[in-house]
Amino acid sequence: MGKDLIAGVRDVLATKHVTFVCAGNICRSPMAEGLLKDALLHAPEPLCSIRVISCGTSTDDGMLAHEDAVLAMSARGIDIGRHRSRVVTRDIVARSLALFSMSYKYLAHLRSWYPNVMPADAFVMRELMPPPDNGGIIDPFNSGLEAYIRCRDRMSEAIPSIVMFISLKIIDLLFQEGDTETVKEFSRHVFQTGQPWKMEQ
Image 1 (cartoon, helix red, strand yellow):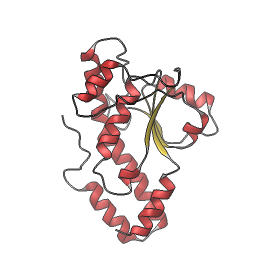
Image 2: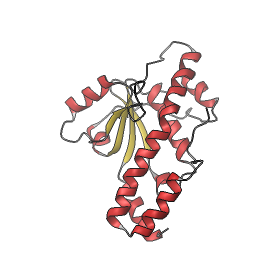
Image 3: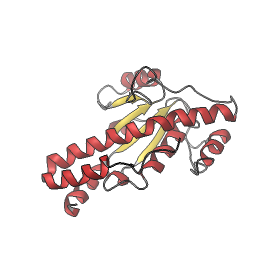
């Protein structure tokens, strides 16, 4: 793959991130952040270099992830124990390569608060999946560990569609900036059988 071109795309992506949004940024969105980061660990460049963050529409900065969220993710081998909550800001929204909300309500808030910088690619968590079950994610807050596990699994089901969507955005960048051979090579990595981001069921 063209290393100079990949480096150039990586530089563009360095100013962007994929953003997950919920209310408190201590349950759903940090779990989604952890799932996507884990899925991208063994993806090809420049896909694996994408920054992934999460934030909340009604939270305080610096709160720990909920204990049950940490436990549910730990069962998948993903550590979110170092997570600290952050409040959504105009800059976070403006720098979002794509944004995924846990409900339509949060998307409505963001579009109302930041109409001039809201990314075109803003969805609820499962929206890129086939209907009919392609909406948001129910808040498991203080509903017990089993609720967090169900929440994790429903978000996990959405991760492949999110990775594919991001991959297509990168292919578009590569196509605009480079030669077709580089696009073909990256595409082969992305669409090959047994994608490295396919989540365990």
